Amino acid sequence: MGKHNWESIELERMTAGISRRVIHSALQTTARIYMEKDAVVPRHSHENEQMSHLLEGRLRFEFDDESVEAAPGDVIEIEPDRPHRVVALEDSVAMDVFAPVREDWVNGDDAYLRNPPDSEKRS
Image (cartoon, rainbow, N blue to C red):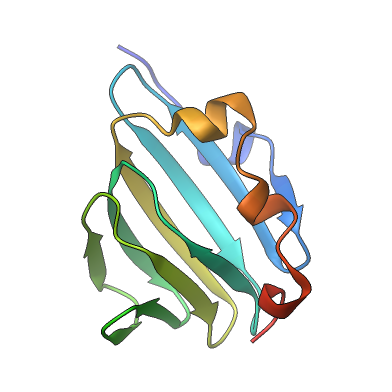
């Protein structure tokens, strides 16, 4: 059994406008993602199933075949290996849950988020 408190977890600045706090358990990763208005998570995909719970603000999830806007209380389910991009329509906070563990985050192999191409930095 583990107990965690979000405020005691270091806020990790990823890039201009995006920060996160992360908890890794044996089988999943849970993160609070903080995005400033117009910040962009560049197009990417991962082997993990993702459930993105919007807590504050508004986000647009862009997929190859559709875009979905999310408001507080919405949960966006993203299946494994589905390419997507996220744009903050206003200052936002999301709680993302991934299964299995995001090994790329554990190993620091998440360059798409740390050093996005210039074309992906702001919407």
